[in-house]
Image (cartoon, rainbow, N blue to C red; front, side, top):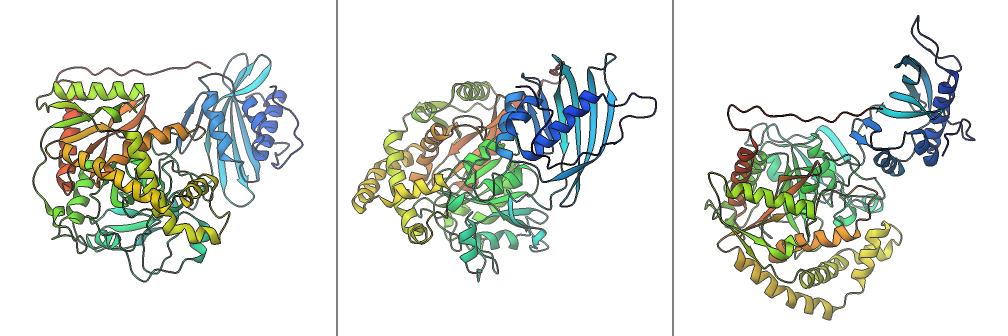
Length: 563
């Protein structure tokens, strides 16, 4: 497509006589200025076809902003298709610098003034290709937002102060919008539900424990609607950014807390995990994420999805912080709310690992290769653990039974509200609830019976060893990807731990195509603190294998592109 020089939509106003160049430099060429003006009109009108045509085709075109760098025309196009247009603005200044002797490469820097307040900066490298001016590289610095509403429902610095002293003093917490905080409403990722909810009279114990240890609340973070998703998108508030992979899904349903932690907005994400809602975003964004033993942390003050599987846990950027949180919140001398004495277990887990073959079969080839390299490196280390392949059982049967029980409980919890508010939830979540509404009592009874031997088999496997496997099939999918197949494979990998009520931790140990993928460890019930210790030991061993030997010269490879 040829970039247009005229557009019927002129929502942006471009001055007729801006700064064209520094003293002694030629003025901006007329055809370049016409291309810039047409591009500006297209971006405000969100004319996707025109914008695609203005960016140079091929894999080397660049676009950056505070969220990260997009490389290649296709990646830029995919990002823009989901972003939406920019608010109305005027171009206050434009500066031109030629970058080549023949004048066919040029730098344009422009200052935009938004009509709703605030200023932005655009830096673009334009190149004349086949007689047309196209953008080969761009960096956008938008106006400073008051807060990223895709991540936060409410936020402060702090939002609520914790104790001034304690083992978690100085740390901040992003609380998933399912937990009660006295004086505030639970929103569950849905604006209609939030509007009709009543302010909570008491703070959930899981929140209070962190405050009592000295952590402060940074804010209430977004969740997928009713926590009934693992993608991380939300049709009402937008999709939180992935802090590790630009343009990728963040993972859900603990998407808000995960993004807040990955981006450095908070140190701890207080989250829930029913079928992988801590482990999936942890893997997608390169975080540590712990799903605790079922019923170990009391769920009072937490909006349920499916009580048979709902579990509380945490997301952090490093293993040390997760260890500190787990030791405080899961030890009965630290927590005022933990009722299960298993939380105080100091026994170390065995240094033996089992690789479940059926789960590994769900993994994408590149991830499986990276995982195999990890195991080979650990086996060749100074502290080699034994690895043994085992059968985890029929994952299709396990997932079918899990989904039936989960759906039946989800409909009991939220079905009445959904019937009273048709059209209040997004299409994907509405479809899941519609399927759940048709589950009969007999279906649920049969499914619960089917889950019993599955849970017993998994409990037997971890009696004297720890399961190890990639957390998810592969890196986080792009927001434009069809995630149905990925979702099905992911849930087959994450559901078994939930079925058996076992603790599971995702550790960022793999890199696949430049993106993080977690490694999941699953252990016996009640061994949560020991599991985090084991995960740190494994991560330290993997890191030592990756470090260059003393006296060696590490090589650095860089990629250069020519425009």
